[in-house]
Amino acid sequence: MYAPALFVSRWRRPAAVLGALLVAVLAAGCARQADDPPAWQPGAPASGAPAEGEQPAQPVDQSEKAISLAATGDVIMGNAPSRLPANGGKGFFDDVKAALKADLVMGNLEEPLTEDTGTGKCGPTPKNCFQFRAPPGYAAHLKDAGFELLNQANNHGYDYGPKGYENTQRALAEHGLKHTGAPDEITVVEVEGVKVAVVGFSSYVWSNSLVDIESAKRVVAKAATMADVVVVQVHMGAEGADKSRVKPGTELFFGENRGDPIKFSHAVVDAGADLVVGHGPHVLRGMEFYKGRLIAYSLGNFAGGGKSLNPAGRLGWGGVLKVSLKPDGSFAGGTFTSTVMNSVGRPSIDRQHRGLGLVRDVSRSDFPKSAARLDGAGKITAPSGTGA
Image (tube, rainbow, N blue to C red; front, side):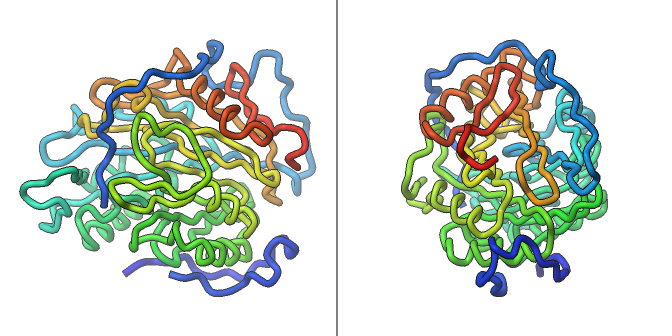
């Protein structure tokens, strides 16, 4: 039913993965929370571009040339049949296209792209249940925006059952887009001559497991033998406007185990991940460096077309994370560009930079020693002593 990436034997950083090379192992609705007053300091006016006066990178040996990876949080373009954006969704991402430009652009696709399969998860009288879908042709809008790889490991991947899940993969493939997130699926793409493996995790059976950490480590260790760089996409953490803080321990939402974000993220870095991209809480969370690798605990809501996601307050804030990594996976720089959903859920650049202010604040609060440093322009640097 799934289409795992072809296994390519490739030895990578032996010290990081020695002894871990085993074969890989194998819903709740979106937040509806009251707005919560922000606790942040706005960033200085910026567009996500390099800080003023920053010197351009000097020429480097090709073996050390960094590649750029861009990522977003939750992406919903609309909810068929009656809550779709105007003009058939054309131009839906126009305001954020420039911010997305990178060598590899990834997003968390929070809905199937399918016609109605007759197997919607919520039933005729849903309570605390949300299901989404957009027409298969909406994959063209993702392509037009610059997306190249979409994560399906989330609580809405199976909103229309296995058929809807497979239809989504087919729609993406028809537009030249990659996908990741199914059990055992390790998606390997070549980016400027560097092999990048992307693996998706969530707490649901249609994805690699977030809660079985030993299994997750085996999947990541396997991915590390297949590529130079490993990226983990993970849908983790409880949902809501008041869930911007990251604390040790397991998080629950409506009785569901949404993982232990810190324990999981550190474990997959130990197993060979070079970048961890989190989403799921519907709000932005902090960023930290662990063993020189960047962990973004949640990139928030990026798009909620057709008013599918609540845009009130910090629920409407998201961002584009752009990270440069060397071929050995080491951090070479990064930026965060604030975005905001308008009243109908279309993403745009946030000229008030509220998301940046929030990420800076909670990063410092939650990770006093390991927090990513973000300046007023969104430039990301590692704190001293983290190995980056």
